[in-house]
Amino acid sequence: MGAKIDKLKKIKKIRIHREGTTTLWYSAIAIFAITFLVYYLTGSQILLGLTGGLLAFLWLVVLNFYRCPIRYFNGETEGIVVAPADGHIVVIEEVVENEYFHDKRLMISIFMSPFNVHANWFPVDGKVKFVHHQNGNYHKAWLPKASEENEHADIMIETPDGKEVLCRQIAGAMARRIVTYAKDNEECYIDEHLGFIKLGSRVDVFLPIDSEVCVKMGQLTTGDQTVIARLRK
Image 1: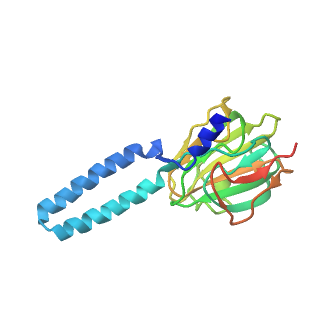
Image 2: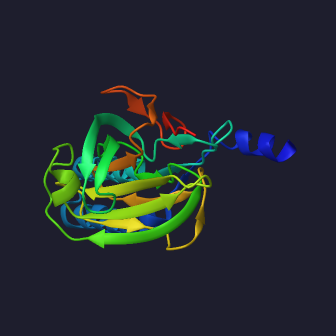
Image 3: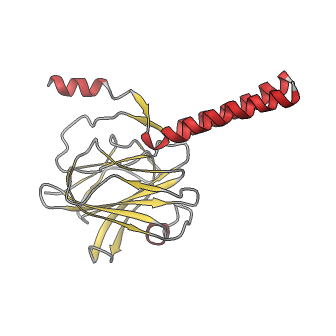
């Protein structure tokens, strides 16, 4: 019980994601160098202030993108499917998934704008059966064809009661790098990071067709916090 309380106390803490550490350091050095060069060449304090202010603003935008809140799901996780990402629901529909399942699945999709947290969480507890990366196009992430045609990474998870859940990280028109931490045959849990997608992108979750949907179209989601569905026993 004490450990659970300690976890809950950390929910509001925010750190910088490891994917952005190098970028932020190098960009900070570049900003300092450019600002110094502008002042050295012009001697204008006004131009120095304008240049420094604009570059600092851009750096803060990048910092916001790489923020990584520490979160823990408050409740029992058995049969629960949580949002793997921050964003909003763009798809809730039954689809025929022919790549792995070859039958009907319930697909719930979350679109992440460049202003959302871009860390991804595991949607369910279980074991990673496999991870597969597929090269592809860079259509706008909210388009239906993006799920199959865009570059994506598929993570198949088997829950403790034998249900299979597919989580798909999808690159968008701006996103050009998908990072996946999930590994074949590893145990995985809600609260753990599945991966990271840079810039605007999308995450699809394919569930058993009889799953109970707990969200609606357009609803905002918080990764690792919003319950998007419940699996039937």
